[in-house]
Amino acid sequence: MSRTVFCRKYQSDMEGLPRPPFPGPKGQDIFDHVSQQAWKEWLHEQTMLINEKHLNVMDPEAKRFLDEQRDRFLNNENYEKAEGYVPPAHDANK
Image (cartoon, rainbow, N blue to C red; front, side, top):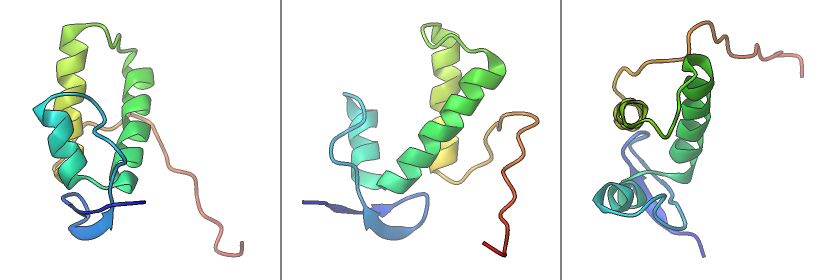
């Protein structure tokens, strides 16, 4: 059974995550206030940042950077995007 949360990114009631994405207060906060859609989008952004910036996720500095960018993304603040990324064009005729 799905659960609904008021998503802080989209400011709307949306389907929530099935469980906290990681332990601790921050994971619980995301579970309580972030939709599945917003979390999925963050994971995509995070992957692009890791690849573009060649981040080692075991490096504490890289983890702090990703945590900061995650918080900014989920709070609709400016965050660092992967440089040179151009989203695919959507063909209106499809």
